[in-house]
Length: 161
Image (tube, rainbow, N blue to C red; front, side, top):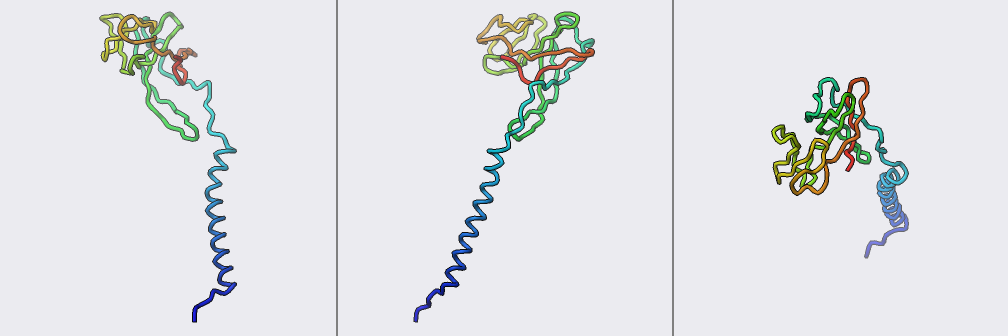
């Protein structure tokens, strides 16, 4: 004689299958619900980082300053080290440039003997105001927003292109 499934046994298996299906669907829908209805961390427009004292910066001689900043990418918050080329143009005026060449992304440094910023990768040169003076660089150095408060120099979060 062949074993025949009773309606109670069949109903039990159907309930278990539908129960597991509901549980898995619920577990997958929670992250989707959070993604759709809770927006990621918004970037602040006024995210300023201190890079040093104005009094310690010599006039018209750029210096590289390093700083830590927090980068918000969606829900992820990371700390990263960055640097900036800071130049004091007058008593209370300061400009800050990204130390990345606009040609292929090599590091730019101040060359006092040339009185300009110099990229050693492809010999691009930039004036103290960031403008291209030679080489294959297609545009000036990217510039940070800068503000001076109570003798301290602050740079904005991202360089302006």
